Image 1 (cartoon, rainbow, N blue to C red):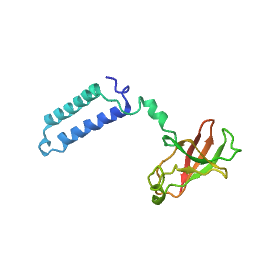
Image 2: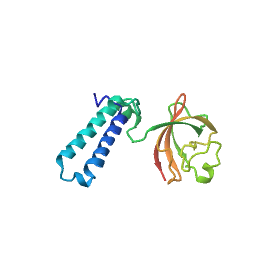
Image 3: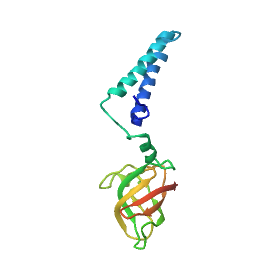
Image 4: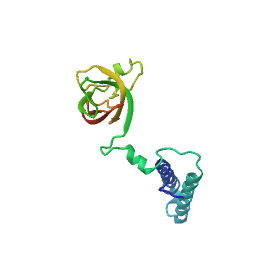
Length: 172
């Protein structure tokens, strides 16, 4: 079995299960203290269990490869989210141009009264970039979606042919 070729989440789940079993049955039990053979058996059994689960598990979860994990996370540490939201767009905003934008995380009273209720702190309800009219468009976000501890989130938004891409630059 090629561990590096496994789906990352499956490998992580297997390792966590193995360590959990070993700790539960090998280290935490009072009767196992000083019994080296018992600890070796428990570790061997836990590792064997890991390989059986990994070989015969009927499920595949998580990204398909380690490169997918790296592709999904930008250098700033944010993952990509694609949402349909409102953004103010002035008619002179050309494709490829970037503007400084703000969003205001939702307060609880507003979040619960929306047609599509959101969590308090949802920061992607609308983006304010200029004095233009607002439009409902697809926005690819690289930033935190829920920020209940902030009043304002700051973004660099770039207009693209079919969507907008906004990267979070800060918050207060």
